[in-house]
Amino acid sequence: MASNRRTLLADAALDVLADEGVRGLTHRAVDRAAGLPPGSTSAYFRTRSALLTALVTRLVELDQAELQHLAEQLPAPRSTGDLVDGITLLTRHRLTGEGRRRSLARYACTVESVRDPELREILVPRENAGREAVRRFLTAHGVPDADVEARSRVLLSCVDGLVFDGLVNGGEVPPGAVEGLVVAALR
Image (cartoon, rainbow, N blue to C red; front, side):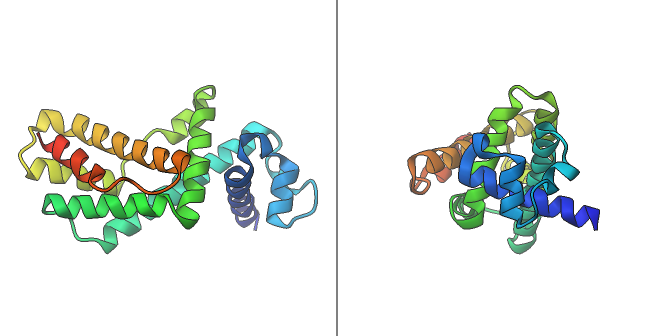
């Protein structure tokens, strides 16, 4: 029961962060978002730091599940077009609906992690199915083994930048942007 309540509160905290930003993330706001009596959040997460840690841990859990689900739904990319399509699908998801809300929370947490080593450690890019698919694709397309990790990181960081730009400036990832990044990673 406590585990379910912690998850409910972490999910509510994600919603508050997406809707109101870091300044709006309070124990009371999370209580309201979760539909629980005042004091419920602070009973589980005594401090703001504990609340942020729970929120970031949940965010990473949801992101990892999303990437695993996407990898299971899509075949391994064999062509540049396959990889572009997969990345474009992910960017669209991260700019719309629930994916957009999580993206807003993710970037707010990323900024907070600059001053909080514990949050930064939780947010460090993890191994996941998407990262592995990019590495395999680059290896299969002749990128030298010594360069695969760096190129994968740069490609995924650039894609992350496109999502951030889409959130800040509204709209979608510009047509051709993902393809340009994939082609550059293959050079």
